[in-house]
Length: 178
Image 1: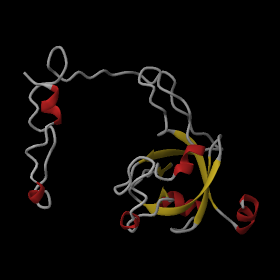
Image 2: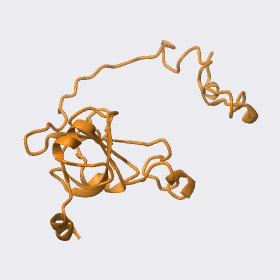
Image 3: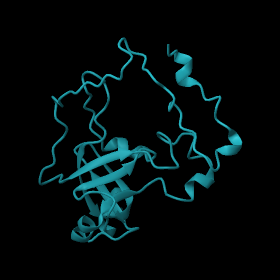
């Protein structure tokens, strides 16, 4: 019989081996802590339907973590070694979208939703789909953009589907914002 402690047990992890051999936590779990000992998946329909794009806000804002940052970065932003690979304030945008908007990598951009606007630095990539942009949650200002819609069952916020627009900042914009 599987016990809760079996799920948390990492005593088989060997610190010396971790630099060359992965330790997969939970790989030996044979049954789950449910009545039928099986994993139970529940499929639900998005009743409230996330915010839709339109002509004014044609992009979907996706938020999430980056490799070196955890949640809002309250602890992981302190060690400067974690900041050397990626800045905290950037927005990933698809190459074709950036070309159409005249945005170059490294330029300051303004990202705006119905709730607010933030300045960020463009990072051009083909690793994101067209009409989507990504801003890490370690950039705490992203909360000015996200939708406050909650799923009624899980109470999870709908942070990963906010309609936004993005444009290159001009000198005129910078004066108005500052």
